[in-house]
Image (tube, rainbow, N blue to C red; front, side, top):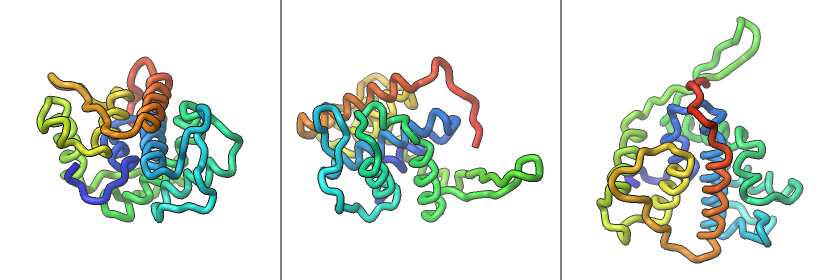
Length: 204
C-alpha cells in the first residue's frame, strides 16, 4: 500500500477509523498478531500463540508491547488474543499515529471531571489512499501476484471484520507458508466471532 512504513495494525486502525473503538480494537489487535507472526516472533504451538524468543524485539512499541503481554500472560489461542485486552493495542497504535502526525489528540474532561482524549484524523489523504488501494485490489487490479503479503493480510483481516465492501473480485490469497495461513484463518475467525450484529455508533 502506498503509505510508507505504516505497520499492519496502523493500516487497520485507519481502515477502521469510522468504527466505535469497541469494534475497532479487535481488528487492530488481529493486525498486530498477524504482523508478529509474519516476522516469525509469534508462532503457533498446537493452537496457542507462542513467542519464539522471549528476548526478541521489533523496535515498534505497539508490537513489542503486545509481544511482552503475550509473553507474560497465561497461554491463549489466537482467537482469544483477538479480543483479550485488545483496547490496549488500539490505544498504543493511536499514540503512534499521533506521533507520526496522522492523528491529533485532543484532551478534555467528561462532566468537567474525568480526563478523556478524543482522536482527530489529520492526515485524511493517507486514510483515503488506504481505502482506495483496498478497493482497487478487491476489484481485481492489480493482479494477485503484484499484491504484497502485508497488503493481502490487511485486506483479509479487514474483510473478515466487515470493514470493506468487496467489489467484483475477492481478497487475494496471502502468498506465504501454510503455517501463517493457518494463523491467519484463526484470526479471521476470531474477528467474525467478535463482530456485533450491527455496527456501533462512532465514539472516541
